[in-house]
Length: 281
Image (cartoon, rainbow, N blue to C red; front, side, top):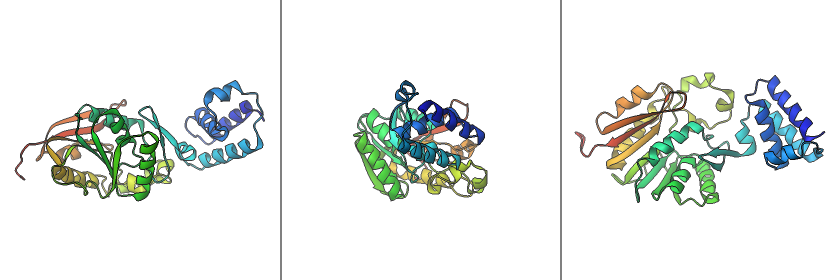
């Protein structure tokens, strides 16, 4: 079987099961089986597929047909122009989260202390460390996720310090200039309604934010009010239809709230500045 035939057959199998982007997925899986890039795939389309490559390719196709995300099969996902290692211990970085990075970059100043809460793969923290001169820290409650994040920082030579803790518990009062987070925000009641690729494969601790999906926001905002310095910033990725509820949580201690919409027009990021003083002290 040639590479060209293998690609056609893989595409047809994926199409038959209504897998999104079947041609692109077949290409990625075949490239992964061959350990080659796309240019090789098409420059050598008439080459025979080796038995070992066919075994790997067939296994990858089977895994994808069963619902396993392509990123967990290949172990890779691009984010902000860089390649990140991903495993089932971490959420797959989404392109929409780059809006959070952009909003943070617009507010980080030289020498700032920046904390990425719930870092997962480390994609946000690594990107901010490489794109700024800030001192970047990252936290996660999952030791397994921190191992993945540390490996990504190492492969990109990103100066990030990692801490295992709940939210920002490891930080002193008013010690942070910019706190960023893509927190768990899927309501637990939505479990059955989300895509099987997400529901069955991505880590629940990184997905579900409580019965309403707002519980982690409540805790995160209280924690940010403690650790963020007056005049510092809190930036959070938003879940679907959560803007009004989350913005209401910011009223007593935060000002200059700003909303960033994604390319589909949905509110994706909420940024707020810590008041110098408030009634809570």
